[in-house]
Image (cartoon, rainbow, N blue to C red):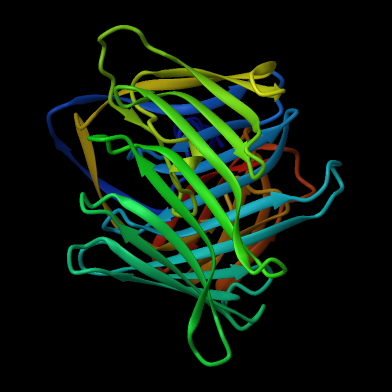
Length: 392
């Protein structure tokens, strides 16, 4: 029992490995980086927490509203460091008994490390995708377009990218497949830049109005910058009225901090807004009343953790077992080769689950257990592996 308790203390300090691994350590030159740990709002309306594994890879993101978890993204890597899977758990409604949904994305890469396929699954069927996205690249390596096909909802669309003479993204066009096999543009986003700048000063979103048979402006995004740091962002509606703005507080010293700002493959640059760099400290969100008057709504504070990486870099070897989701709410799924036994221990080292099986896939119910951190032991063809698992 003492051995189990010691194991718990060792593992619980870090985010779970999604894949069983063993390590060999190599000494390398250290480098200091600042890892984004959280974005906390003053009214707790929307808070984000970011988690990293022992290799400092982004492995999970939690979104809370009013101190209640609303969504979790969990990421899984291959031996090359590519994100090959992301599980997303999210809640509907506003009460503790509201249902939740779970989806899964799986990614395939080419030899250059670019995503070429994305398969989208929905619980309970994680074997047959509800949609498939295929990526196509130009000879210069830039994304040309991607094609989304879903027999599940009867969709076949292309999102086509156009670039200006400086190689900057100028237009992203959503096109819907027609009965004759051609694709018709139904919406697009245009990107505009100041002379000599690489960050967009304006994004214009337009959609096709079938009644008026023309494109109409849905919204606009306006940006201002100090060097490469966002100073302000303003959202403008289709009637050209300002809706809300975000003003950013920046570090006014010359200190340069290398920031690790994690994104999932399902995010784009508008998740943080453009121009997120080492200077960002916080943001102030305000609503417009009239064309210039604003009313304060909330602040958000960005918290970072400084780490010196590269002093000891584990070289990992992938084995056969995966455990997900983590954090978990209702059940834990274990995939592996020739799983023989699964045991779950609480923080005191007490055995709370013990299953003997002969399988490659096992679901373990955990909804009835107290919330907290546990240690999961899996005995399989890969040997005996242990994982910290968080129940929320």
